[in-house]
Length: 610
Image (tube, rainbow, N blue to C red; front, side, top):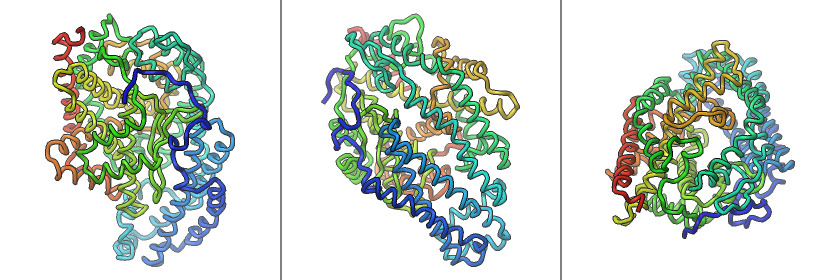
């Protein structure tokens, strides 16, 4: 069911029906049980400490030590995830904040207490270590032990590893301060909607207002939204600079040539993958300019502004979708993934995997997370746009990846990296878009145009914009590594220049230049490039499922079930995608070009004016 877009009042948590909230009792039945398990962590940690100095005695002993370590990691994961999810329900709630801070301290203490593990393993004579790793008692840990050996050049002494584990408590300060400022302290004021009615501006309502056909509404929302960031620009610069310095410090201590190398090493991703992404997207600048000029023409503007990039181009009024009918749309769109997949996902929707509505103090955005052995959960901030429907499909991809990996793999091999996660989620979006386009009546040019427009906007936002972010992070870190301080002026100039390169034809002003200061992912360095590689790989995988059928579907499902049992590029290669070459990026850009051409054909037909 769809209705004209509205701007609902922001609810408090207490006003939301239980069926629209996630069910965290699958992790702990209540907060008291969390307290009990949190209090038991030191006891479990002591079990690991008792193995100190004994890891090389025998394969059987090492197996017992690893089993105990995995049990401890799972306990800490439950403690951390539950506390974080409760904190994200209302980030201004002092009880939840205290629980979250306690969980962070628990995690840091455990990391420090177990920091001896890898250095002690690597202190074992390499020949003896190879003998242990080859023993059948350790077969379940073969990939884990192989990865320990791979990390040998960057693992420090036990004493240094313990200090680094403790230093992480300090290192998170910039990220935590930014999160508190961005999610709890900043207020954006009140602006008018299309009807002239006052709307309390939040991240969620701003996203809706940027889709208004009234340019004055979009402009007012953008000016009000960016004002707090401009007002706090010096604080934001200090926070981000501190975060980058922390990244550089850790990389140097571990013997990496750069912070980027350190980040990519975690998943065995060569730097050429990062470089190829940037170079290939930069080569597509004429295509990007073509897309943006099409947007300018359809909107009837002399020049695009930053607040003109999200408004739908179809003259049809944008519709609002209720959450539950939207879940049915998602399930229909994912039928190519098979009956088992859609049945499992439908059961998840029915059993409160999703925290649906935007509420006061709730963390912004959307994500999927979970704990091994419990169903995954999804955070949404539902405003009812078609974008929300696709976001639900996206996060469902993450959830199902977790669900299948947890069922197929032991705990230590189920944890898949973000590099793979963004592929599963974007396959869902791509398949759903193709299904909706295919179901569109042949004479509904405007409806088809609207879906093509959504895909083009998503590709631009995911591949082009995130590649720009990736180059920004690389250049910002390189400056610090070269001894150049990251001042506000440098950050503004760097971001503004890159924006002009990647978004040709859009006016760059101070409201654009400060945008580096409101990107939370920048506090998790060299993370965002994986959105771009993920969408590119996903388009290739989705096309294979569409064109080849069952064989390709099984390759994809095997990828999901594999979790983190091998390195990402190896698992992707088995699924039929080679990201060591520019081919998947170019395939994604080719799909982008086909979409633009189809949109231009509708424009040329005059249907947009009819």
